[in-house]
Image 1 (cartoon, rainbow, N blue to C red):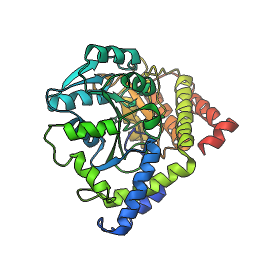
Image 2: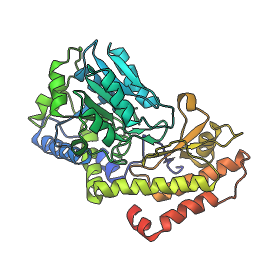
Image 3: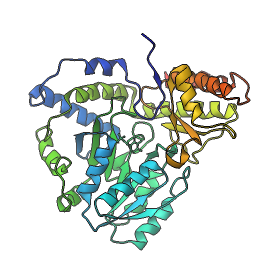
Image 4: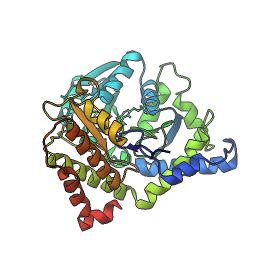
Length: 386
Ligand SMILES: *Cc1c(COP(=O)(O)O)cnc(C)c1O
């Protein structure tokens, strides 16, 4: 059998052996004390990685399901909400608002830039009736991380709740929900959490829970009141994705044994090695405020950027992400979150150099790998990324 693909994509990400083993275990029934004990422990682990003491609902869906749950449970048709743009995922908040008849007051910013926190304050001052601010921690399409701490401090001065899409950001970029005053955090399983796609999570502050009880938007599967009620029995309103939750319990052990700050630091160091390697190849970076989880690299002038991920996969079985929407062909993205390792990053550079060579780009062969390797070889880094 051919060796497994190396996924350097910002979801799905590679699975640790402990997670794969958990996924292969015999199924247990979800209405048993055995499952409830495990589910409770897993949600407590999620509270630790989301850095919140608030309740967390666990949905069987991809991350977008939790985004939709946030919109339908917090807002009613005709309500106003401030939506911070800057990439394809931020635009999903806008699309969700549109679908449910919610007026989105957008705060635009060029792709590759981060929304200025001051612009959020201006939007809230101009629209005092806005009930929510929708933001994105790591904008996966551009590799930008937002200053959620400053955005939260500004939102706190208004009656609006702050909702953060941390689907790719969680466990890679810091976002301590309670300490920063983030009302709602949504995330998904297939990125920093090292699981297959299929689970989504949403944490809710008391202010957010108050909105949930007021929302008039029709909802059924995503009605968070049902999840909230089931949580009192460590249960879910509908059948739990049992095997994924069993695997989550294992994945959280890995994160919490290393420590959340240490896990975030490891991502930051892999991001540093990736950026250093790209620059050594004469390439430039797209994000003005780069995240720890994913690095967006501009395709060099004169080279069709779509060919870079294609050749990396066809020739080396290393998968990186291309550009989305208007960014298609202009950039490609290397993830360094979750179970992705320094060895994977180096394999990524080997594949990248091979693809760039095949496309006729001029560079010193080995320079990207060498520069990334030099970052990992620094004694302080070597200990932290192990
Ligand atoms: C991956 C991602 C999503 C979408 O999640 P799905 O799991 O594909 O529904 C949303 N927002 C961000 C920032 C993401 O990275």
